[in-house]
Length: 108
Length: 118
Image: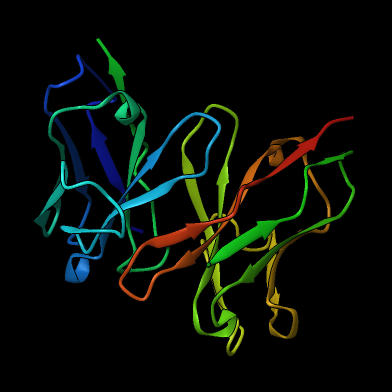
């Protein structure tokens, strides 16, 4: 099983700043089968990024993903009020399709 | 419009059985993997398993194998998650989600809250 470790656990930033979230895998994620999700309180998760760097339909271009192998990054440029939420990475290259434990982005 | 609509919340006692559902619409249900994800209160997401309704191929997370059963009825575009004997530790929100052809889960159900308490 591939274990995904996200850091930091919590990121405190003011609106307008850039957020950089990390997701590190215990072994290489095949074909960059890595996704990022946003979850706001009381809502289902929403797909942001698939294939490590491709934005899902309707996702603003301030969200970007990068990385390969075992190290992946989600960057959110110019944080908007609606971006304060919990973010999860997920690998779907090998079963079980594991999630990271999440990073909470909170308003500073 | 693609939609996944889940069955409503349930309150059960330990030892009881339960089957929750996830009905897909707006797309070819039998052509996409449907997954189940658990979220315990205040915790993160856990991938439980997936099913391909076209041929009922199922992949379980070993952590959940033997604890739950995933199934689907393609004739009514519905996937299921069931327990034969619930425990208090099964109390959680359960989401179904569709695996996109491009990767990741692109559509999610609204969640089914299962509460197990004596």
